[in-house]
Structures are given as C-alpha cells and as structure tokens.
Length: 191
Image 1 (spheres, rainbow, N blue to C red):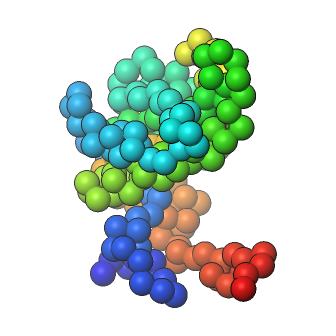
Image 2 (cartoon, one colour):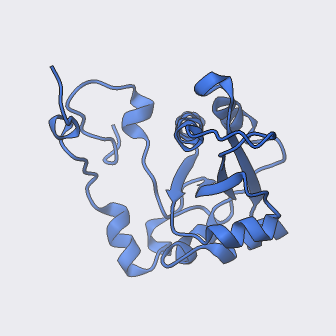
C-alpha cells in the first residue's frame, strides 16, 4: 500500500483507492501515437443519457502546436506544472446535438466519461490531474469549436515525476495527506 492510498471507510477497488492527482509529471515521458487508446476506449463505454455520448476530447501531446495552444490557456499555478506532462486533454460537453436540440445532461455524462478514463489510466500505470483553471473562450477560439461544444475541464496525463521539480508551494500540496469529506456528510437525506 502506497502512502498516497486513500484510507477509506468502506472497501473500494484498489484502483480507486490508489488513484490520486499529482502535479509532478515526468517531463521525459512521452506517448507514442495510439498509446492512450485504452483510456479513451474506457471513456467511450461510459454510460450516458439515451446513449447520446455527448463528450468530445482534444488530445495534445507535449511538443505539439495543440499542446502549446492548450497550455497558453491555463491559469495560475496550472501553468507552473502542467507543461511537463506527456499530454493535455480538453474535455468537451456536447450541450446540443447536431440539429440544435439541447442535451442538458451533457456535462454530467462528460464527467462519467472522464471518470472512466481516469480509472483506466490509473490501472495502466498513468496519472491524471483535472483542472478547471483555464480560459474556456480561448480554447473554443483556438480550436474553432462550435457553440454546442463547451470546454468543461482540461486534464493532464502522464507518468509521475519527482516532487522536487515543483516550486515550493506546490511541493507542500503534493505530499500533504489526502483528505475527503466524511462519507456521512455527503448525504442530504437518506433512509
């Protein structure tokens, strides 16, 4: 058991207990074309309302023009560490279908797809970190997204790196104990 393994109040799958979101990524690690096929296949098979699958992704490997475009939209501390990861991915919700019909569940379904992707990535020995700190309008403009495609989050995928490579304030966060709200506090009501 790793010191980063969650101390759960009930048994969960090892992959879930061991999954966490580092900021230190190995800058020498790279993905060959097709290397992430399994993680995106896991996302593809996530459940969705009416089997609509209202999620899309922009996958950018470090060193590419797309990677630079995404990295330029990152805010605050995210710019300090995310560039060392092997890939950046923009997670996009298709909030209306091609005919313009609203898909009000799209962000929820995207979240499920990304969760499946994250668990598969961890099972494959990779690490994922989700970020909300980025400029959505800049992503849409940089990639020419139609209005019906809404960037919701950006994730970093790669191999774990050394904590020492991070600036001091981020080092502390990287090694801080993992915490969560108590299980009982998650319920608004229950029988």
